[in-house]
Image (cartoon, rainbow, N blue to C red; front, side, top):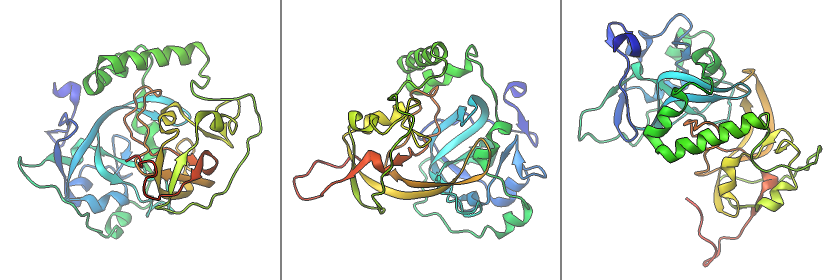
Length: 312
């Protein structure tokens, strides 16, 4: 078992965590002891933005062993979990606004004692110490190709965890989508049109505003043959939000691109509160990334009494 799951510093580094369990993030000193000279463990960096969670107790959102890397595809990664509410604020990465859920190696966590309360507030710990240790802090998303390995379609690990987390039916759906994508040459399975040039719109939305996601027919008119609007894809996972009223969570105008690791500007794009990707058409990827919504896919709505209920 140790040969299969691996060890670190003579201690098993696989907790086999499950969604809903409460864990405690180890102290900064304990975590630094697991890192190499690049501030990484098995290729995955411990970012300065993560230091504020040290010694805090959080609930496991999901365990992760397969992951979608933008521009590459589905990959295998081991001994990793995502914790509820633990997102990257981009403070040490030029203000990147992707708000990715942080990936935690299980060697950085410990199970919290049973019947222990969660920490409701996260201390704003200084990142100076960690930044001094990591002279060139790396982005986890940009490091995923190094921290993961190829996961071919015939590898059973591609679907095994889907069964354990979401059931056999979800595994069959994921397998069906994988086969369709293979047969269609990785063409988009969601909405698309025959256009090659796509329109834009600037609503100048602000966090807290209520918007309605336009219906499928309206959104299709804004997409090109690849299902994108100015390079940004309207994914199949986003279709379930069509016609729903939601709150603007934040404006996104800059982000690090996973494939290149470079900062890019992005215009007229927002995150909606609660609108995350369930990975249904992406091999069951469990990252729960926020969906990027172009403002042209949205409309402002009133919030007068009696208006449609907002999707939480």
